[in-house]
Length: 218
Image (cartoon, rainbow, N blue to C red; front, top):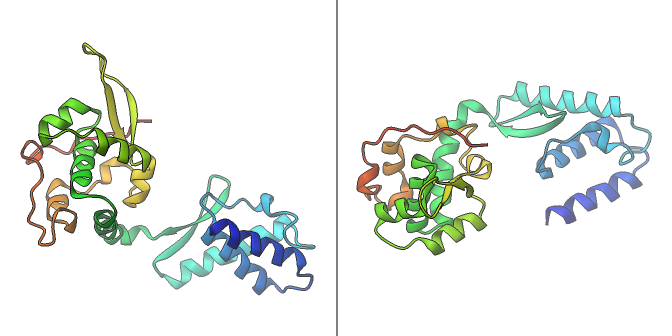
């Protein structure tokens, strides 16, 4: 759907000869919304007729300032040589809560509990997760890997050299986190709607009271 929409916008801009700066800025905003990577001004050359890269960058900077002055829930940041829309950092706690609830609607309770164990215990091997949950998790691990919420980060140096699992950058993005140190506390995770309609379902026993000591693996 995104590809269709951006293709339409590209065709529209190529055919428009007399757009004013306001229209161009509005189209750039559409591109920012659709783009899953930082939008680089020099890659937009040729989309607009007779508009320089310098002018495109100027309009993107204007758009960034407008977002900043509005003080809404979104901001435009210049990152990695381009521009991208992000939620404002002061609303991160609310984004976290929203994503916890959103995750619960897409994953089974068993998958979420497995993901919680991996997030707080990583790097962790399958047998350790199964020892905590008391069930076979082969299918759950496959599901989480397919969703790119977890990844294989190596092998543990023990007999059999089992695979070790950890979370991914997609996991951080999903929860609106910059790094693993920003994970909700175990108490917040337990009380969230992810673990039941009343928020009373508890985490696996072995996770209760454990220290939140995680570091991001590259």
